[in-house]
Image (cartoon, rainbow, N blue to C red):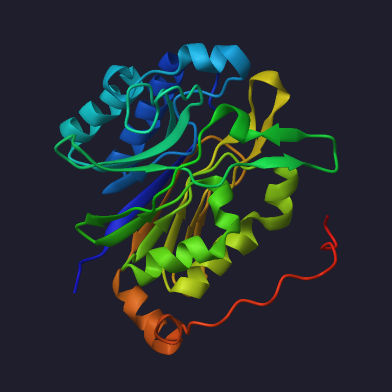
Length: 290
């Protein structure tokens, strides 16, 4: 049986410039490592939160991104595993990016040697108009990813997702069916949707799949007035919240017992009960939300 380990989620308020964000994240990551964390995770858009042309101008390719290089060095120096929840990356020159002006919202898993062992581009784009007047069109700035990722770690397999992905349960089911024991949901969740749905969605994804959920989140007010909900969560496979970051900058940690995964799945073995079925016919009238 895999031995328990300590997981840590970093919660902070990213500004528009990568350099001060890197200093803050490295400071918090060191606190987490000093507290015994073996796996340290950061939120979505860890390197910067910016809009419009300024976002495009600040984005760097993987090979040229100082934030990514700095966190690889941190992992190598400390011997920790690091999940960069996501970075804003310029995919120019990569396969499939010919003529593509949009950026990538990309998650990175880094091992203690400082090597990138997994990458995941956020699949689902947050295009939404909220009742309070907030409007987001993530697909204008980012190209959606097209592939799922399950990565090996010393404690089990880790399925990678980002933020708005959490509203698509079939993605998490496919990761669990592919062998994921733990799932990451780094996020920049809005305050209205966070208050309404954050905890229940994350607990549901944990319960449905018998997986640990790690959800490091941004908190506070960013440039342009956007506000993030915070409440970084670590949830066990039975749906119990092991750690909640509340509304502040800092770290939260939890002792993770991988044995809880098999225990929860024995109690409710739903992963063994999936069945194929024919989809329903398309409704002849518009859906209520249309």
